[in-house]
Image (tube, rainbow, N blue to C red; front, side, top):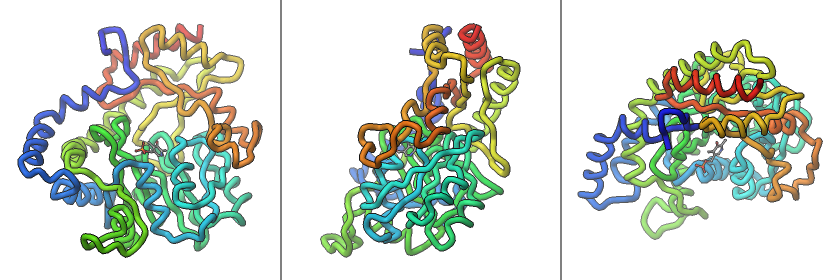
Length: 369
Ligand SMILES: *Cc1c(COP(=O)(O)O)cnc(C)c1O
């Protein structure tokens, strides 16, 4: 609970306070019609999110993991084909690959930004049917080298953490991207939701078909699909929040700048960096506690001081029991493994105050002393 002395990792109630009136009015509209799946609110949101993203299409889904699966399924890759993704990501990226009947091919990340490392992608290219970079923490993976490496192979983007982020002015660089509207994301629903974005008319139509039981006309099922649709109540929330997202992302950038200033002289802390060409949206502000320091002790001290710090992510995908069958042991992806031991995410959300950030910095200084 937020009291005067605690700083949560994210504060969803502060965001809700800004949109509450619009959300309640929208819910009333939907409740009056009784149309809960898709409907005009979902159509409206898709149009608005496509415009926001600078893409021709947006197709809503039930959550981000489904959206990734939908994006991969639209490509009709050969069953069991390799999809290259970074070892340092949320497990959903790898789950979606398996669910789409494909094979995760994990690679390490670069030490400066923790984004998929093109040099490591080059190592596994013979196994790759597609590339699946993750735009981690709010900035895009290095798309130009990845697209060049990909050659004719499709590039699918995991944009769950990068709503509004751009690289050289563009959000979408590959064939298709998937995002998540999990409540804690930069654009969060009041439950689960997600979407696919693409400039390709055929892929958008395929995503829509597959996510609605492979059916365009009721009871005619043209291709094998499943159920992953955006619901009307979530669309109401997302429309209200999308109107604030540019300002909210701007507020996140200002908060990140403030952390940069507050933490600049801290011994034993490496600050996050923005890769060239990137417009960062700071989904997470993640520092690294340098070797020789005990990250877990720092985390415990922060939590003891009422600071909602976190770790993203404590265990890389290849060391998760569910992905042991991929056959990578300890030492397979040294940068991902080392960063898992060093990462520390500090509270950051659009409404965070300067006083709250100063409290975080003070607590961190004390924890490091
Ligand atoms: C949140 C997230 C997902 C999955 O989204 P859900 O909506 O929770 O299914 C996928 N990839 C990344 C990188 C994420 O952060």
